[in-house]
Each structure stands twice: as structure tokens, then as C-alpha cells.
Image (cartoon, rainbow, N blue to C red; front, side, top):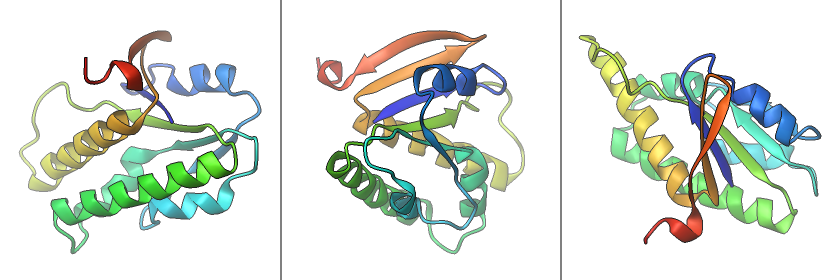
Length: 149
């Protein structure tokens, strides 16, 4: 899995399009399970998942606790990776970094930032490569082999 993270309008999509020009793009839809993306995999074709922040927005009002949400997407992420390996698919996830700036007063907006941060951490822990994009510039943050060194 490849993870691209950066702020709004940082150039993440342009960078991913240039690197994975033949990819299938799938917009995560609020209320959709992450594992449903398996149905959109084409053998030997990269799959780009985007709009994670909008997708997570639905989780803010969900009846599940943050721990339950996190456990569910961790399981789904593992299933996605297994399916990607079986079909020789490079899985690419684009995540918005919203961790900088003022902490909102509204409880829901704080929870959204927490969920987004946890999702990003969980995806980064599973990613073979993590990239940070800012102003259209790309920086490699780590590879899976470097994670515990």
C-alpha cells in the first residue's frame, strides 16, 4: 500500500495521477465500509482511494465508539491488502492532513480530527511507503522496512 498525505490543495491527487496514470480511482462514500472497495479492484491495476476525510465525517455521528470505528477499518484495511496482493493491485490511499491549526470548539469537529489522525496512523503502519505532499513537492516519510528502526 502507498499512502499519500498532505493538506488541502497540496497537490496529492496530481502526484498520484502522475505516478499511477492507469489507476482506477474510487471515491469513498460516507456510510460505505472500507472493505467494499475490494469490489472495484481490477487485476494488475492500481486502485486509488480518496476522499477519506469526507468518508470519516459519517463516522462522527455513527453509533459506534471511536475504538469500534477504528477496529472496523483496521479489519477492512487488512482485507483490502490481502485482496490487493491476490490481484496484484497497488493500493493507494490519499489522506488529508488536518492536524495543524486551531482545535475546534465543536465536539464533532474534534472527533473528526481524532478519527482522521487514527486512520492516517493505521494506514501509515500498514503502508509500504508513506509520502507527504506539500505545495506539489513530495517527500518520502518512511518505508515499511524502516518503520521499526
